[in-house]
Image 1: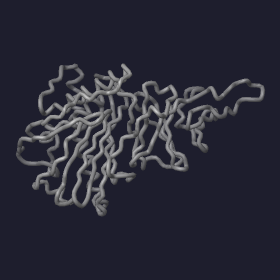
Image 2: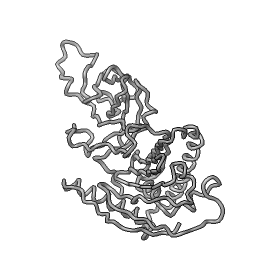
Image 3: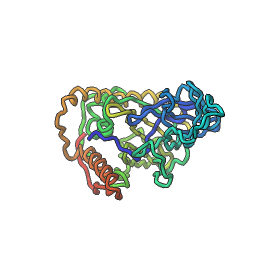
Image 4: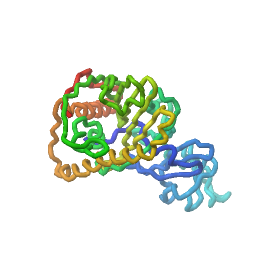
Length: 349
């Protein structure tokens, strides 16, 4: 399955990486996208190509609520993309410039990340009432992440997603002195899963006493993991004193590359002191996932049949079923029917 899901929100970049009055080019779902921020802090997104001579608008500048092209000064509204001014026109020209338009994308900044919505046809104007809400993390309000990391995956988004949700690769891929070292110790894991609107979740359960690092959140710490299409995974830890959340989203660049965005939120007031160390460990952890996926590509170029087994690969199977149903529901213009049913999964790791 190679189709990239549409009618979905994708993260373009962390909000902290885009300053007022600045614009940045992003390639998302194979399309050139210009993401910018006005001086008042409002964000916008539009196609990064001037319809006049094809030069990217990223080389231009922001003027009020408009974007100006660096080549001939054509000016376009960042709200609806319509042309507002062509400096070279004279009073003798008979041209309705309002009919010239750069396609725009719905763009929102939520909980510290800038999201862009991709419709089935990005060149058509959208009815705002048909756009779903941006994914959010419950219980964290409008807080921005304490830490944001980005990593590039040289693979199709499907392999990045099922690689990150894979519960059995940990003892082999994430073996480091700071995470897991020495002889591999396996035990049977037994977890309850259930469907959610566009995916599935690990039903919250209390962490075992042996999970000492989680004690900073309190004496009773529960964990809940939720995955929803197109590529949003939240891992929420709730204690009787503090809470923390790991948000991972993956945005396709095209059919062969994608970007993983990982945001960490916490309510621990002194956690910022450990931010440099936490950033280092997060990057190393993600890099281990990236490196094994790069190695995997050497075999995938021969298009081998893939073997997904129960129960360790059930989440990967669910992902493909969810994606297939989502595409069918969109094509048939009907409500989405979640194919996931409540189930206990067991595996050794």
